[in-house]
Image 1 (cartoon, rainbow, N blue to C red):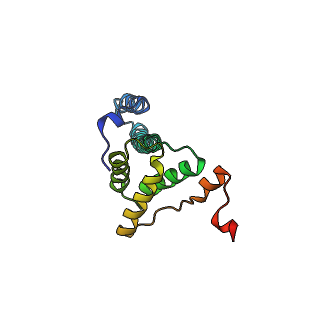
Image 2 (cartoon, one colour; image 1 turned 90 degrees about the vertical axis):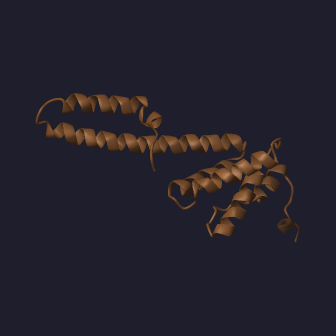
Length: 148
């Protein structure tokens, strides 16, 4: 996954590169080279982690997640995206569809979850479970299971 230059130029990355450059300027400093390599790898991992955290926060905001269960669903979807189990493109097309088809919705999460699940079923990709029963419980209504 290529990283953009702006992601690599975070303050922590710049500091690590400056320290590595200073250490490498000294001749025959093998330890400095090892530290520079480790710092670059850590910086790259930090940049990827930061990118996914930002992306998850963006999705949470776009979908107006309110309940802990909604937030947990988005988090589990993002974990699967990071692991490569769900394509990022599928998540993007799902929330963009919701924004396009239901731009004034106060609850876009509900549409997103359904669209993502339909796309996942078509592609043979497992989407994390979400139980809509949570909405009935929040409203204090009895479910159809309770009525039988």
